[in-house]
Length: 205
Figure 1 (cartoon, rainbow, N blue to C red):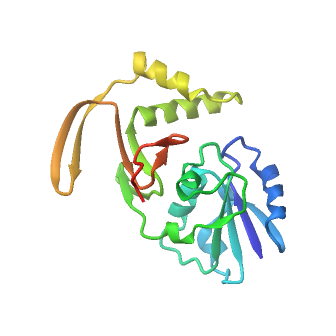
Figure 2 (tube, rainbow, N blue to C red):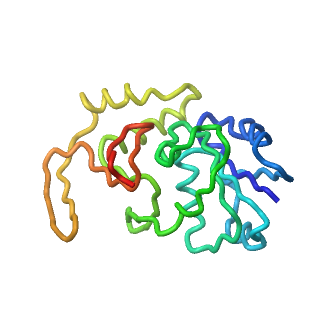
């Protein structure tokens, strides 16, 4: 059985329709599931190596899956069909959006973590603190109020000029502590890309 998991909150919110294109790549019986309604312990328990999961979405969908399945053994293959709005992870591993799904199971192993307000999260691409997080927060507020496309450039410019206030950041790297004043960005990168295609760490593997 092939299980196509999609996130109705990802990308342009038309992913259920976009998954129809997967029929061109997949040979077998397909079951579609919205990840918003999945209990992964229950869902994954009966699956075997004969089954396949296809994650359909963007970076957020991948990160949700990585965290929601943390500590759960996944017996089947996990493929990725990038169809989100940013697709930074897809750029990082060299695959095109809406192309043939590729295996990502290896990338879900031994992920770095971040602790926020006492809770630990795994991440594939990066964790960013600063104006990028501010832009995402304001963008989410805009999405909740309107179906119009979010203009992140305008949000960033207004943040730079008026709304976002840089802060002092203490960073610990290899046991050494550094303090910086008026910090606008503090990204921690596992991959090379973030923010919809910006190459923050070109030499990263």
